[in-house]
Image (cartoon, rainbow, N blue to C red; front, side, top):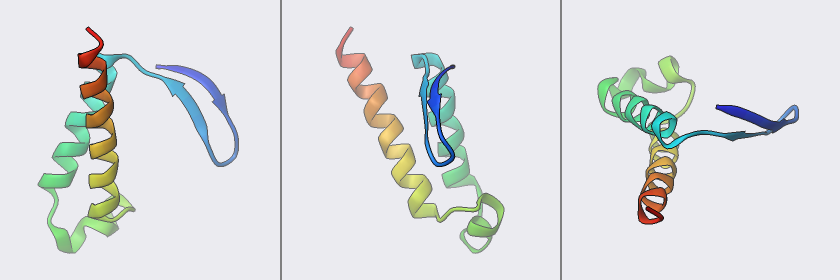
Length: 68
């Protein structure tokens, strides 16, 4: 991972396909491995927010595969 830029509220990073795969797998485990009643408390985000992030990461990985 390479940090490109950051501010108080946002950051821009460059990650490899392998790093994105790790992130994708971790988000998938979090989404499916924690009971709904404790999800928000343990993660600090709703299951829907995590699912949206997972979808975004998966979409990026799909686009990267299409470029090969």
